[in-house]
Image: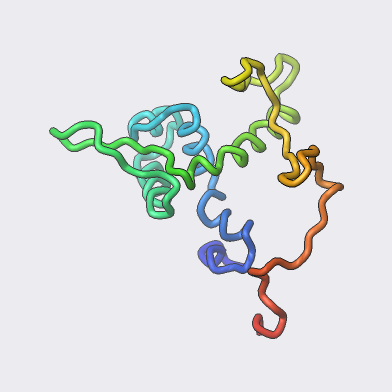
Length: 156
């Protein structure tokens, strides 16, 4: 499987990785959820070339994860805002944060705490079953073919 062919794979993970699987893209998304919106701020925070930032932002806009919104006319300047599709990545980003906090924080603890605005408590993300509300862990999940699965006869 080649990197540039992932978007055509009959696999939701492969198609998603084709959009968000690059390390710089994930860090740009992290920054978006932290309220960063402007090109210069992404570049300064990440310390990477303008070309890399521009390429990743362009892909995220083309894929509908971010939208460009003007914030200045002369000269024309834009900021990047999460779309609904982009906001849907929040659980993904939070799962990565939680994994990193659990395995790489060190003795001092996580670098950022996340507070639920509605109740005022710090929280750790939990995956829950949409039907019964029970917490779901890896060993409690099984898979089966869904309506978008490619049948063996159609794959060849």
